Length: 384
Image (cartoon, rainbow, N blue to C red):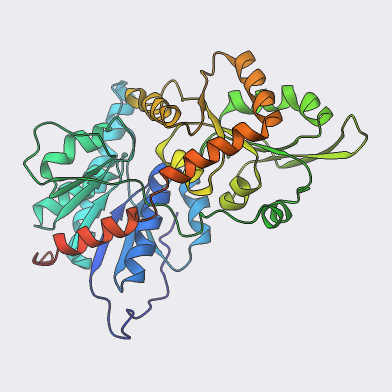
């Protein structure tokens, strides 16, 4: 993957950029999407942001929509104790550290923000060694390994409301939600359906297993498709990159009307997908939950059972406690089937869930973080 260079734009006052920030956010859509949201916010205030991403396909696919942002791939690999994987981790992190040191020397950032994941450690350590103020953002309700390890080196750590990390000096933690990309907003349903090639007069069930898809959900969708179609329910299943080709099927409902089913490896119209959907089945990553909240889309979430520290389960439990959706384990697919048809037949219950989602939406999250970053770095000297 090559670095994407933006067309440099002047700051809002017509002059030069006020400050440069580095944002480490690669590896998954859950890391990359809030990084893009933060970069958009910084740009709106006259700052310049460079986003450090991984070399994974999911990163390359997502950034195609943002030609005016700067993206730089940085070496990195997930931590593992498997001998071969551990060697790869050490080698890639070492390479990432030297790339990070060069970036800090060259760009002289006023601040560095890390969203966790395997691309974060190198740039945070490099920034600390060069005297750059560093901040971390954790959106999950169980802080990840990178956040826990690097928090002591950070001037600021953003955590979800009600979550804390022990051992940090006073004033380091700020409670904030997850920044959501500007494009993620609820659209009129008819417009959203038109963008996706769906019939707005029929209900829509969407399946979205995160940026990398979920085979168990894809299989469930194909198995239940005949019954969904019989009841006139359209299906839009985002299968994930590498999990099959794009496919559109036309089926027949009990009333002889036509029903559309779409299987797509990737969806770059997330706002349209969530706005068109009467119900979503998905994972419980913090990014997915934040987007469901922003678009007020009822959902059934199945926590990924192998997520680090079981953080998706913690997210899902909180989500359900807020009245914002249902949680079902992926080992209980018959329960999922029953819940899906029950919710799709119960308009009043879905409307009640939407009201809870509306209550949870914190559009001021990005403003809070931007204000704090600017105050945090107001008196700090950029890297020499």
